[in-house]
Length: 440
Image: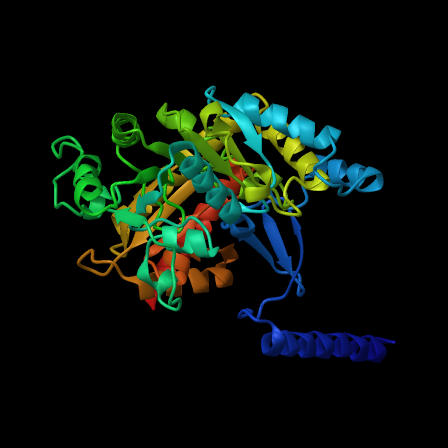
């Protein structure tokens, strides 16, 4: 019997190996050697039973972790009733999600557009809304921004590597420097003495580098792929004032910062700034449901449905999951825990930075934290960051880095359900990872 079990186990192993080889040959995108089997809470388990603390929340989508029981229950019950129908009809899950989104977004935002399938199409739709509302065309974004991967949002996003393969991009996109105080574009000493040049000089870009027809500024309140850059106090209020002065629509891309990630339901609340349009996706699905939304001021409601409407946008099943997700995150104490656990992780990582020369900076809000990696002189060292992230798997950590694996910032963004004990385990493993790197 024991010999038979070994033979069967070996056969299963051979089958998995064959399947992996087939996938590596035929899937359009690269696949790692790890095959995952199931998830629970903040952990993802591979087919050999190894558990990994997911510091990437399934590409930042799993705000409530793997298999949250309330979200799973909602989805199971909804599957038995109705999975999808045309948006010509009302459904209770979609109506409830609309109500909840209006409740948790800034008070000036009163229109919800759900016919978008993900963050890219939400951001593209927000720009279309701004263009229709203003009659203008240009879009202003930041150097290190990431707004999506449709052709429009590829053009809108910063970083030359995103655009290099494509001969024809959308005209009328203007990029300006980030509020990256550690490596200030204007070589200023700090926000207390710089006069907020990263906002003030946008006027020069508008006057001299735009077409003169600027519809909107699109900004991530904390950069996602661009390096977890947290703007200094006053930056977003100053940007709001500039947009008001020039009649420009201000769009907050909260695809990554929203749904509690920064310790508030949205970063707009943290900064006390009301955008004209806010986009959300990723963590809105709670445990992986695909859902996105644009929430806009009444003045932005001129875009007709036939100009931006996608088949699976506002899917009934995903809407039900999203409404439950908002209920869970909105409960007393939930976001307070996100802030407290995030602050505890930041404190421990900053203590690590004092001991380890590879750590140049630790920054973040809530559970959106970045560890900037440098060489011994503090210069950006992306290869070192990639090596550390890759070796994280050996320490039971799933880590992602900035700029789609090209950057020097390791991103710490576990599910928002992370407990204090799990936060300490996360930090223990990060410390062991850096200790091994130092000893290598």
